[in-house]
Image: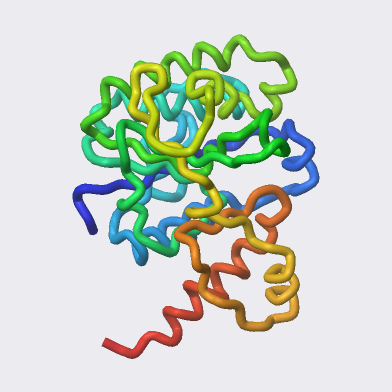
Length: 253
């Protein structure tokens, strides 16, 4: 495993509040974390640790903190804060959502003090930032702590609509505005804002149909595939058709 890099992924069970979570129904988040860890080990040769609460033992390797936020969106900000402030943050770290798989080296995207993914265009003007992947260089620890403390404070002032969905990214949008691609100075940080489509794709509908039909699918061209919303239903099948298939086809050592 690569000592100089770690992947962390925030998770603890919460009752569904957003419409997409209610439509999804039960989902095997522990299974998703395990698949994520396998994908990271193969593509980045480093460990994956869940970030969770001290009262939430998980059946996967995890770091636990005494979090207090009762709502998922704010809890994501809080547990990230705990990690950044802790002695556990002792190496370059990439925060990755549990409902993603990683297929390529993510180290080249470290830049400045913080790297985030953004979406351009009027359609995403209200919510241009994706929190699926963020890059935290350990040399910027003090600045990242201050930034995330401010993000959590802003999150706690947001209205009910954001608390149900979006309070994990709206504070980042406010602190990083204007959200434009490239390396810019924002709120005491040098922030790299990357077009999300260059790094991450959601599982497209035509591949979902191929998976359902049991047909082979191509290896992804981007480093990260995410399974937002109802795409989570296909995550295990996609894992089996890509990483699982590659393991079966690998020649014996």
